[in-house]
Image 1: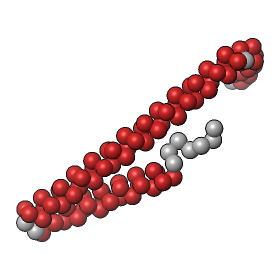
Image 2: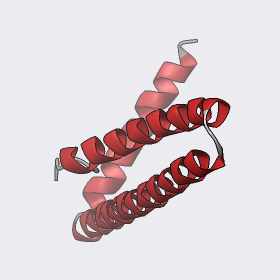
Image 3: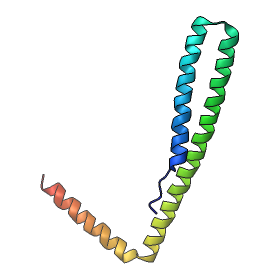
Image 4: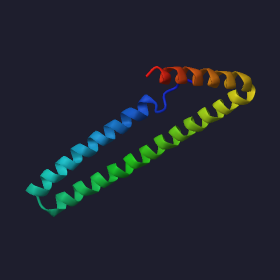
Length: 105
């Protein structure tokens, strides 16, 4: 249950793509001020392609996050259904502790 939400490979790939997009945007601005329209159009097309790929990667990461959230919700629901009195006791104990801490102020 202690698996990372986004695996290190996905994280690295997203970071690399974002870094590449920033570099490409910087290069595109420089090229636009120095060179003609043809180089600018090519740089813009490369940047748009990288943005689309980053959106795709973020969409995949979002899907994994949603699946992990659903899995955690199912797990919590299962625990509550299997051990309702233990959960009620834990919540009551937590409420007493919070009330005691709040009363100390």
